[in-house]
Each structure stands twice: as structure tokens, then as C-alpha cells.
Image 1 (spheres, rainbow, N blue to C red):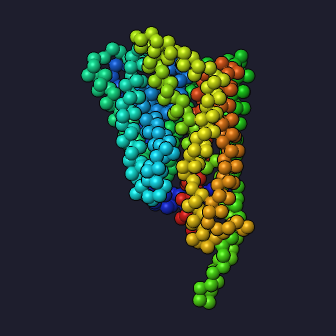
Image 2 (image 1 turned 45 degrees about the vertical axis):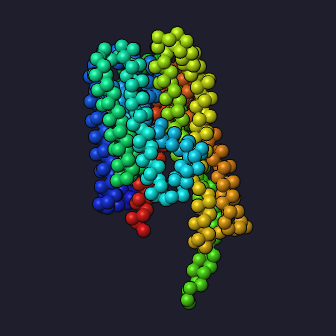
Image 3 (image 1 turned 90 degrees about the vertical axis):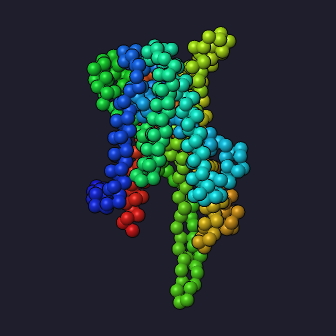
Length: 423
């Protein structure tokens, strides 16, 4: 506890660190103000009824940071930007030019790559905004508007999504933590008082076993995420002795920590994004006048609503994105080169390509454990929903999963900033 208070004291005293934290808080307050400004033409009663038992829109509301439940000007949230980032990173696998841009051209290449993701966000936001507003209009949530009013709403919510993307990037640059993850986190946390209030007024003794089961699942999710995030595989590293003048440098032994889950919360966010985007398109097509398209869309929608299919697909996507994001962000070749340049080597392993292959082999094995465990933890709320039939368990479990992961990531980054200033 003494260490905690010492770090807290350092955070308060250090002007730069204090300003970073204050910047994050101000940015999140600004986001929450934007999230309560509604677009025109909303039927509040139908909106509340529509969201009460709709799992798909409940999960979509998580990604909007809570802005969708109010049909606010930021109702799309950061979902278009996340989708654009996924598409761009998938393209690095297929395009050697994009892969070289991201991995080999340094900071300038990464900035250009991010700029492409921003540009792709605009058409995706327009498409998602049009589909979402049309779907809500057909459900009677939005009043019938003129073409120009509808166009104005689409432009406004697209601009809101781009603004949130910008706020998220500012948080990442001038604050602490991942800005996009923190925006999603803020939206989830802001809904906790309302959720607890509803729970207090609707609780009955007959529902006690359900809530006990959800509590046990919540504890399992928290414990699992903490365990898998903290777990690491140390690789011993030795620095060769170097003589400079009358002094001898190096000759020390240390270790290289490889995390079991290098990707953090990103696989969960990516997997849910991939699951939700096609569902929104299918929901939109299901109400078209074309009988063939409508029938096909309803058939696919029924498949997605099957809890077993949905859980298996969710598990596979989390598993895939854990490996994919680790491969994109962690480069064994670059690590091997850096070790060789600094005069370090892994005992028993030749420097250079052999070291890179050795690190890649270990990383593949430990990521397998992390991907399977993270996939199981991710589908656990869906299993609870299948057993109880309560859709809120899946929504609440997914929200809890994201909150725990974001808090752990934020604590680690604050701790890293504190440690840097201590040295």
C-alpha cells in the first residue's frame, strides 16, 4: 500500500503526468456531453422499448460508447474507425506495399498508414449511418423525415463519428492509454448507475440464482483477463562483454518478457466489430421490398441469432484476431536485429535469423494458450445467456470484459510513466 501511495504522490506532483491524466478526463467529459445531444425526430417511448430486449443493438450501443441509446450526434461512436482499422490491417496481409509501409518505413510510414485508415472511416461512417437510420425509421423509432432532414442527420452523425475518432487520437497522443478503448470504456461506465438502479427496482427472490450465476461468471471473467494479461514467458538474454579503454561493459544476464496475450483487449473489440457490421447490413436488407433479398436476409439473421453458431463464430474470431494482431504489432525479426546491435544474445541460439525464428516459435506457442483462454472468457457471457435466456447477461458480460481489459492496460501505462519518471 505504501508503494501505491508513493506512486499516487508522484502522479500528483509531476506536472506532465498530471496534465496527461487531466487531458484524458476533459476529453472523456466532452465525449459524454456530445453523447447526450440527440438528433431530431426521435420517439423516446419507442426508443426505450426498442432497446430494452434487443441484444444486437445493446452490443452496438457498447461500441458507440453509449451514444446509440440516446440516438445522439455521436451514435455511431468509434465503430467506423475500428472497422476501417481492421480492413487496413487485413490489407497488409494481401498487399506487400501496405505491409512495407507499416513495418519498414518507420514512423512516417505508420503515420501514412493511419491516414489511410482515417480516410476509409468517412465512407464507412456514411454507409453505417444511412443503414442505421433507415433501420430505426422502419422500426418506428424515428419519425418520418424529409429527404433533406434524413441527409442532414446522416451528415451530422458521420461528422460526430469523425470527431470522436479525432478525440480518441488526441487522447492516445497527449493523454495516457488507447483513446478508442477509453471512449468505449467511458460509455460503458456511464451506464452503470442506470443499470444498478434498474436492477434494484426489478430484483425478485426468484431471480436470485440468475444473479448469483452472473456474479460468478463476472468474477471468472475478471480473474481470467487479469491472469492472461499478466502472464508472460521470460526468455533469458545475455549481453556480451565489451572492452572500451580500461573499462569492461556488458557481461550481464537478464530476460526478455513475452506476454501470453500481446494484443490485450483489441481481439475482443475487433471480433465484435466484425460480428456487428454484417448484422447491421442484414437487418437493413431484411425489411426491403424484394422478397428474395428479404427472405435470404431473414435466413442469415436467424443463423446469427442461433446462440451456438454465434458463440462458435465469436470464439473463432477472437482466436484469429489474437494471432493476427500479435503478428502485425510484434516483429521477431526487428527484435532479433535490435538484440544483435546491442551485443545481446539468447544462450544456445545463434544471433540473427536463428534468434528471430526461435522467438517466433515461442511466441506462436504462448499466443495459442492466450488465444484459446481469451476466446473461452469472451464466450462465457454468451453461454450464460444460452442457459438463462436473459440477453442482458451477454451484453453485460461483454461490457465487463472490455472494462477489465481497458483498466488493466491503463494501469500498466500509468505505471510505466511513473517508473520512467522515477529513473
